[in-house]
Every structure is written in structure tokens, then in C-alpha cells.
Length: 215
Ligand SMILES: Cc1cc2nc3c(=O)[nH]c(=O)nc-3n(C[C@H](O)[C@H](O)[C@H](O)COP(=O)(O)OP(=O)(O)OC[C@H]3O[C@@H](n4cnc5c(N)ncnc54)[C@H](O)[C@@H]3O)c2cc1C
Image (cartoon, rainbow, N blue to C red; front, top):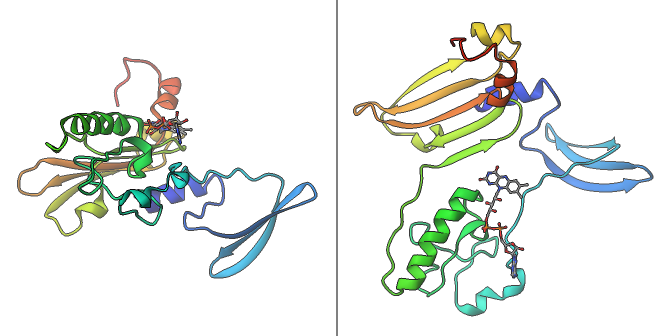
């Protein structure tokens, strides 16, 4: 899946998902980026840099270590994601601050779990979590639901897969990129997860000949 996604994205622009940037400086109207490529340190000049480097919890000023909490390498208290409790302390995390799954619906569920447990403390109980769901709004879009192939490694799993590259409708629409993999328990047949790199449904809808079309 990763190879397919990387190949599709690389058609549009050079794409290095493991890039190591060692330096960034401004020279006149340009930005000079020093990075590692194939084990060599190289420098290139660009007009602009768009840095999409993620977010981090705003915890630094809270001196959380003084509260007796165990912190991880990011300074985030270690917590149980089923109860949202930090160790045995009467402290509960909810949302992006936990640096776990920074998504709106996860934050909402975590808020419910953390709030209920805080109100019921010390009767702390595991709350219901949803199936993991992740979407990257690239083109093609990347999506994962349930357990990933990596997480399923070593389990008795069957995989169904389809490539969009030679799919008739995808080809006609010049959208024949990406693939879909679905995973199921080999004995039970239960659906466990799926991973996909494919064109955005909104793009499909725009280009679709209409609701009567099949495919
Ligand atoms: C550009 C962008 C796009 C996103 N797209 C998606 C998406 O498509 N789907 C999806 O599921 N999720 C998306 N997310 C993630 C989603 O917005 C977050 O997971 C969600 O908002 C987390 O909710 P939260 O309550 O934990 O944190 P937030 O919504 O960040 O709320 C935290 C609040 O705490 C305040 N605050 C911070 N520090 C302090 C302090 N010291 N004292 C008092 N107040 C403080 C902040 O000002 C903020 O109001 C996106 C996020 C971004 C930034």
C-alpha cells in the first residue's frame, strides 16, 4: 500500500516520506534547505517553504512533572487510553493533548471517558473507543480503518486487494491510481481493517456521469 501511495504521489512531485532536514535558512528571497538524500547531505534553493510539521500539546509551562506524573519523551503524561487516567492519579487527559490520535471524533470520545471517570473517581472504568479511522486528504487520498496490515502481522489473516490502475472506469476517467486492501480474520471471516490510496470521492462525484452509472 505504501509503495502504491508513494508512487502515486511521486507522479506529481518529488516525495520523500523519510526526509531528514538538517538545516533551513533564508538567503535573500530564497530559502536554502539542507537535507539528506540517499545518505548524502545536499543543499537546494527554493522560492517558498510550506512546513506542515504537525502540532504538539501546549504543556511545557505546566510543570507537570511536579504533579508526580510520569511523562513521555514529548512531555505528555503517560495515560491509559481506555480510561484516559494518568497512572493512578486523579488526572485525566482528553483530546489532542494526549498526543495519541489527534482527531476530532477521538477527542470527543476521550472527553466523554475522561469526564465520566473524573466525576466518578476513584471508580475508574474503561470507556468505549471507536474503530481507528484515519484519512490523509492528499490526492490520491490515503485512508485506514480498523487494524492496519502492520498491526495484523503474525495473525491468521486473509487479504483482498484491488488495484485501480487497470480498472476500466478509473482508466476512462484518467483516475487510475492507487489501490485498496481489505483484511479479514482467516477463520471467522470477520472484517478487521482496510487501507486505501485512491481518488477523492468528491472528485469522483464531480466527474461522475450520474447516479445511474454502475461501477
Ligand atoms: C488544520 C487542521 C485540520 C484538521 N482536520 C481534521 C479533520 O479533517 N478530521 C478530524 O477528525 N480532525 C481534524 N483535525 C484535528 C481536530 O481539530 C482535533 O483533533 C480536535 O480539535 C482536538 O480537540 P481538543 O479539544 O483536544 O483540542 P482543541 O480543539 O485544539 O482545543 C484546545 C483548546 O485549548 C486551548 N488551550 C491551549 N492551551 C491552553 C492553556 N494553557 N490554557 C487554556 N486554554 C488552552 C486552545 O486555545 C484551544 O481552544 C484538524 C486539525 C487541524 C489543526
